[in-house]
Length: 270
Image (tube, rainbow, N blue to C red; front, top):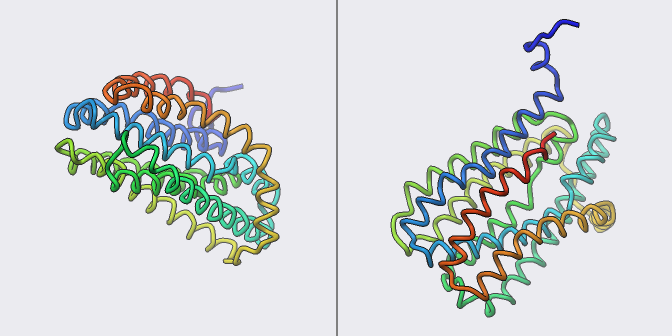
C-alpha cells in the first residue's frame, strides 16, 4: 500500500472529521481567547455574572437539544435516500425542540427570582436564555447523518467567529456583560437559521404534527438521558458555585474549566 495524503483527504469520513474538529476548536478554543479580555474589562464580579448566565443557557441547550444530535443523526443516516421520511423527521424534531424550548423559557422565567442576586441584569438573563434555546435548535445532526458536514460546519464556525469579533468590538466596560451573550446569540441564530432553510430546501417543508413530535420525543428519550447527565453535570458546577461563593470565585473557576473542556472533548468528532 502507498501512503497518499491527498487521496486520504478526499475521503468523506476524513473530511467530516476535519469539519467537526473545526466546530470543536471554535466551540472550546475561542472562549480561551475571549475570557482573559472579558475578565479584565468586566471585572471579576461582572465576568462571574456572565459565566453564571452561560451556565443557565447551557442547561437550557441540553434540554432543547434532547440528544437529537445522536438519535436524529442516526435516523437521518438510515433514511438518507427517502426525502419524504427525512422531511417528516425534520418537522418532528424541530416541533419537539420548539415545544421543549417553550417549556425551558417558562422554567427560566419561574427561576428568575432565585437567580436575580447572582445575575441582576434583565438583558443578560434574556440573552442567555435565548442563546441556550438557539444552541439547542440546530441542524448539525441532519448534515452529520448525511455525512456532509463541510457547509454546516462552515456556517457554525462563521457564526462563532463573528460572535467573538463582536465581543471585542462591543464589550468595553462592566455594564456590557449582556452584550457577550447577545453577540453569541446573534451568531447562533444566523448560522442555525441558514441550516434549517438548507435542509428544508432539500426535502421539502412539512408542518409538524402531534404524532411526529411525539415520535421524535420517544425516539430521542434514551439519548436525552445520557446527554442530559453528561451536559448538566458540567453546568451545575457553575450554577452551584454562583449561588454559594462570590462571583469573583466563579470567574476564576471559569478559566480553568474552559481549558479542561478542550481536552475532555478532544475525541468527540471522531
